[in-house]
Length: 293
Image 1 (cartoon, rainbow, N blue to C red):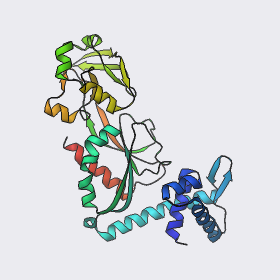
Image 2: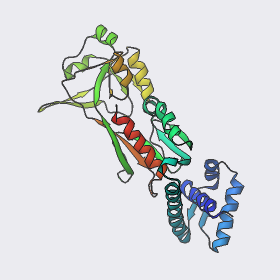
Image 3: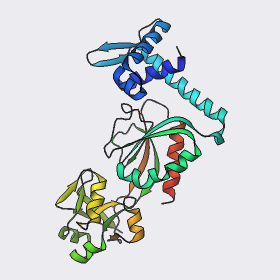
Image 4: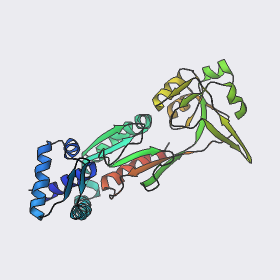
């Protein structure tokens, strides 16, 4: 039995809570996972997991082994990276998650450069606008925007973008351009479901709360982009979301004398584990990308 493989398999079982979920993430059969854990328990002469109808939980000994094994694998990863040298690149698999539109516009187009720097690295990308369970999905690092719902999350802020009121020239020619935040009440808005409808506009000491109204509400940023670019209304969005169109003139900002709350981009790492060297380097890569936006 390969000791590191056994530790990695056990860690995945604990993280996912079942043999079958661990097997799916490891791309091996469930019997193989069960056998590895059984061999590990026989080697250690102790039970590592408590099995019940609710799933698998580590025993007291299993929890101690889990924590030490995770640190050992992390140290092995770091030692291998140091021995290979910074110029040798990363290897293995990196699993990341990100919001669909942000990744499509800003991350995936840059992946060839990152993969070129690390020819022995494979990257799995999960695209989802929702906040997913990083441990259950086996994610090494997630790119999230806005406020983090979990204050205990291990996170690193990578960049900040202003928010703006954005519309196409055709929409503004048809409906008129608002000159004050209050005039937004007369306009059609394309609303993005996770975002609030009430926004605070500030200028010097003035603060004006405005509630947007619209006939279109979408559950994904891709839908908001498509509706705005089809001249169906204006929206409040990060400058990142329309970066190319703002540059080309396909959309433009209005009410530029007023400020809206900015939005932060975070690299979020799974709780209960050290961020891997691969995850940290990828986060730094994205930080470099966004610094040039």
